[in-house]
Image (tube, rainbow, N blue to C red):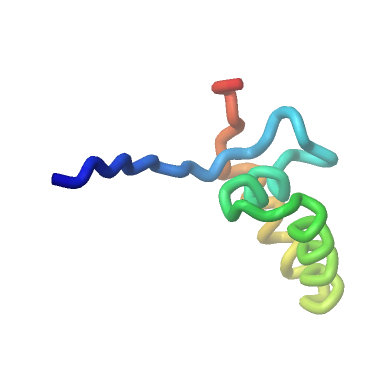
Length: 70
């Protein structure tokens, strides 16, 4: 019999590693990558999408709960 532990990852805004609202830090934690990569990708997406990514970022800011378990 195999003992396997399943952990559930939840997408939350970071309360400690935030620059604006913690959305990018929360995504970086969820994906397991460096927060700088996510921030650079967010800025590049905003530039190349003529601001549409900024609207999506704002929606994530409003809809993603804060990480309060710290």
